[in-house]
Image (cartoon, rainbow, N blue to C red):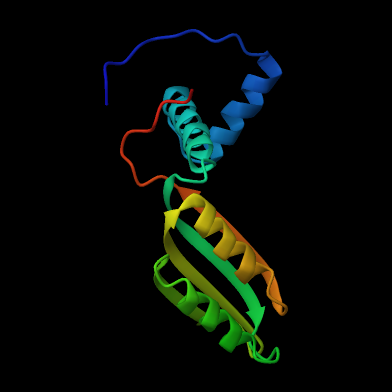
Length: 142
């Protein structure tokens, strides 16, 4: 981390009050760390939008494992994209419903395509892709 720089920001008092309540619920002890986290989050979101950016992340799927051939289809997609899939975990939520989480790494565009294929497979009830940057220093935004 570089040297700390103090800066002032003009914020509507109602917005700041809502922000203070929000960060207190999340366990922040001061605004500075909450602001830093929000800034880092926005910078990472911008960085992973680059189709060629190296990203890491997770694809979370909720699906009915009794859906015809669905587990086989999901496994085939993962095997077809094995260069992106680092690990998977599977949990049985009830008699019909499974949760599967894939840990992924690769180019942003390829990871996004895999997530779209998995989430869009018939029988998948819900899915979500979460991406981050494995780099410790964030790239400069042009």
